Structure formats: structure tokens, C-alpha cells
Amino acid sequence: MPALYSDLKGQVVVVTGGAGGIGEAITRAFHAQGCKVGVLDIDTARGERLQAELGAGVCFVPCDLTDIPALKAAIQTIRDAFGPVEILINNAAHDERHETLEVTEAYWDGRMAVNLKHQFFAAQAVLPDMKAAGRGSIVNLGSTSWIIGQGGMAAYTACKSAVLGLTRSLARDFGAFGIRVNAIAPGWIMTERQLELWVTPETEKEIYANQCLKRRLVPDDVARVVVFMSSEEAGAITNQHHVVDGGWT
Image (cartoon, rainbow, N blue to C red):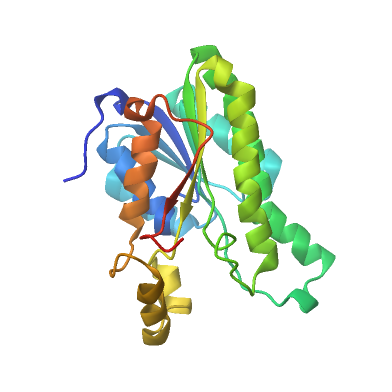
């Protein structure tokens, strides 16, 4: 049974991309802690099902995170429903593969918008709440793809490496207000999307050859670390980059 952190009960959490994959596991994990969870996601059907299942304490707001005014409005909706935001989990991303020689300027800008830009503006939207409270936690989801030098998606890996720079800058700028900012880099996590699109018996053999742990990594493996990093058990941890990849890197 996952650990329970009493300090998290009743806290207001925003999870971007929180209706599916790793984000859904994070949403469920915070809900199990007794948090009030605001879920932002473009997948309306999945978000509404999740809210209906979990019931009280979850507020789903459909949102295209690449539309920054809509993102800010969605966070305000969560604030109106639950109160000031105390924890932000910047989870949303899209690991679409692409050939470097085929990337256009518009495609590049789109990858920046869906994988990086919203993390900054979501943080900007909640930092005043956290400053006023004198505490807060932001966890930015990165990736090990850039660490291992994965090819075939240069724009994505560029964004995910930039998450670390963003994290460290925010941690330095806002630590004096009691706000902690950390990054988590998942490895190859077996989400529904990964299993449908990329994982074959051959790739799974490759994964186990690289991982120290010879098992599938699942969304809950990441969610447990995210919850811990948001709790007071991690109260002295900030400006850090935590890898959850089964020992690949």
C-alpha cells in the first residue's frame, strides 16, 4: 500500500495532462492522499470519466495547454473551486517522433508549446498563491530521452532537457519564499500510449537489457515519487533532478 503523508491532506493540487497515462496515476495518487485535485487535460471524455469515478475532491477542466490564456483561465477555475494552489505538477507532454530533416518552423514551435512553454506559464500562474502562503511545491516532468541520447525526436528531447534549466531557475528565484521546485525524469514507462504505439517484444528486450531492474516500469512508479517530492517528507529537497528509470541511466 502506498505511503500516506498527513501533511498533504486537503492541499490543492493542479496536475496538467492529468486525465491519462502518468498524469492519471498522479491524479489518483494525490486523491488517495485526501488532496483537492484540479485536472487539466485536452481529452474531455477521459477527464470527465476520471472525475465521475473519483468524485468529490477532483475538478476536471478541459484545456488546451498550448493556449496560454486558456491555461491561466483553467487554473483560475481550479482556484475558484478549491482555493489557492499549493502544489503544481507540470506533467503534460507529447513524445511524438519526428525526422529532423522534415521539421518545419511551425512544427518546431508546436513541439515547444506542447512540451515546454506551458510549464513556465503554469508555474507563473500559481507562484503568487505559493508566495502568499510562504510555501509550495512544483514538480516538472522531464524525460531520460535526452540523457540517453535518444534519436528520432530532436524537438522533444530539446524541450525535456530544458525542463531541468527551468526547474533550477525557478528553484533559485523562489526558494526564499519557501517554494520548492524539482524535476522528475521518467524512463520508459509502460503507459497505454507506449504499449499501443512503441513497445514490441523486441523493444521490451532492449529495455530490460538497459535497465538494472528487469521489469516493466508503470505510471504508479512515477506517481509515488511525485507525491513524495510534494510532501513535507521532502521538505529540504529543491533544485534537484530525480530519475525514475529502473537504473537505465
